[in-house]
Image (cartoon, rainbow, N blue to C red):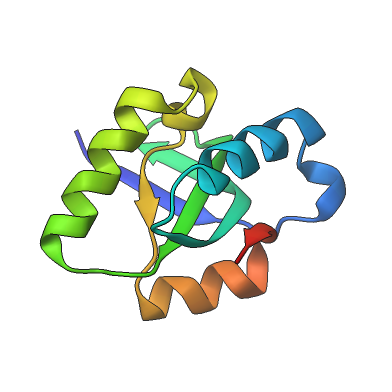
Length: 109
């Protein structure tokens, strides 16, 4: 199954406060998280109609493989189900620029 995710321009009123709080709570409890964002994504699976879903994305202090693995394990073990539904999105330099431009930053250290 081919799946395409595209970040949409996300205004602050498109982010439910409860969802943003869950992202902040998760990010605050992880020293590895430098910043967290919430964005509306458009998901297209195979040739089906696209649908929209909120997703969280995280900028980490360390981006080595071991740090990424630990963060992903923590995310899928501890994050609420609605956060997990949008996937474990860790931002590299290129992705960070897009999320800074089009998403809402809800947490930073």
